[in-house]
Image 1 (tube, rainbow, N blue to C red):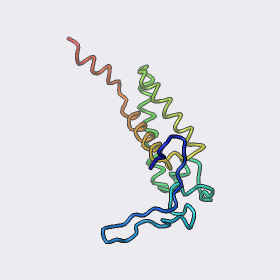
Image 2: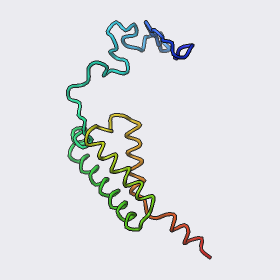
Image 3: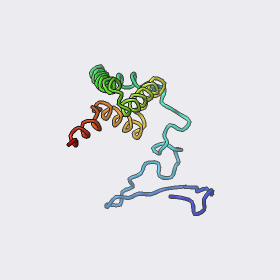
Image 4: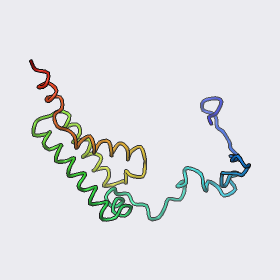
Length: 144
């Protein structure tokens, strides 16, 4: 839904969504309980157990095994990036800065709570672990 004119507001007083048998699928469809069962749920009340730290979040959500796997993943990516830095691979410098920035950010907020940011972290970690100087390898293969 969007307002007909930019800058104008929309007031929703109820929403309905029915299944094939005519049953209401939405909870709190008339907003009688405020924003309960609607996004953003955290408006005005955020869970008191909320953790703003990536590493503690992984520990609590995934346990010691999950934290160990995450730590090994960071070490794997870091080792690969360190080898790239030693080869003076420009991509390794960029990826190392991005990984370091994301892990630093993870010390003050939990980046796993926002799916898009978690996807970026996941892609960043996987691609950092696979840096092997591909450009140089391709150039050597194409030499006559």
